[in-house]
Image 1: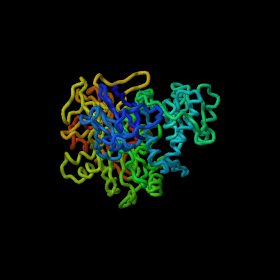
Image 2: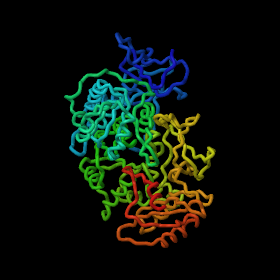
Image 3: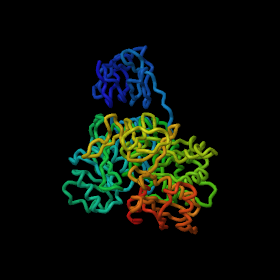
Image 4: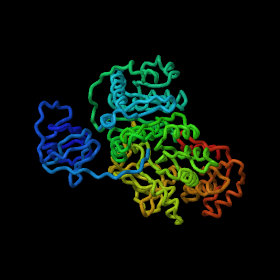
Length: 103
Length: 499
């Protein structure tokens, strides 16, 4: 459990997945990927545990993931096989509207 | 957050794609190449013991390498306007030392003896063998790190250094661009100066979308058209004066003959209705977007999209047709309000100052702090109105308002009326001192080639279309109006000459 910091980069302990916190509520959240707590991106992974089959939906680079209430938003910066969850509830992939090109 | 993370994602997803190409000499760099170059130059920046990377040079491959390597090294990137006088450049450099300066060959010589500046030539900066290949694998993710310092154009005084932090630039890109949305054939033509916010935004957008960005360092309509055809450009951004020149260069032709150009966006100043209508006729298959933004807001905050352009152009209804000169609706995550001088929020179609709020809004100047209020609203100093549907219209700078006998007049609406006259190619309205009214309306116009008109004819033209208080007391015909290089009308020069 920790308060997630905007801009922080975290990585999965069980797959290649990495995320950046886009926005987060000022509350303790247990953030998991593949069913295991996510760790600071600077942490060296030794041996990886297996992905929890209930948390194996995978994440894709460039996609954004949110809680149902939209309070937590993550950007996937490295694809992985695990699924993201906050306090046990799987995050949803955010629908993004394609905007006109402006620059 | 760090813009380097955007490049890392790009290099991991499409490493072999060409990221940037210098239109001048055809040299190019792939996304993996750009990532590796950013790493090695970050090592050089760190070793030099400087606190800023300054770049005083036209666009080249050194531009994106400079931007990303400074983000990796954790120091602000400061692109300087190479068209300023030597004295102005020296004054700006003195504000950012100790600096690592990348510049052209000639200038590099003149800075070589300067103690606080480590100057290198563009060729040296681009030469891989001059830089260590290794540097630490990661970069700071602190969202409050300063990414870019941009000196504002200083049209109203001493240039201010706008502070853009990593969080502002990353928020803008995440809000405006879908990652890897471009396919391999997409190419962007970048012709805005590298020291302009649009130049920074163009680099970041292109990288995150996965396009090939082709750089044009010295704009002319002919060079732009030639490069767009040769490189099968699919998307481009221009300032209004550039589009006016492109339209002029195509005069007499039925179509622009740029079949690949899917989208053309513009911004940075007021677009005359006649220019955009003509451009839409010349580029019938191209999507037009109008982007409104400021340096202090990390570029675009409102967009008028392609469908809105087409609907407005095809409409017989005056309200809908007028949307063609609107700057559209706010981007997702951006809030906009119009307020009066006392700070009260105004309703639809009421003219006031534009306020903006959002994650991408910095509103901070070095040494002055943030100019946002307690709720995060930034006063843009741009005047505007918003219609019932939320479309934003620019009405000039808040400081440009002419106060005539207690009545507030907006130069833009009078200029629009003058521009509708068949002999008028360009028009500027300013206030000049007047004993009776406090301020009087004065106009400087540029005529279309071969056309003629008179002061009294133009006064009558305005008289029949607007209230009499708007009729210019004086109209002068000039050969050209003074603009800065990004197409901003230098109103204070017009004023000085008309007084």
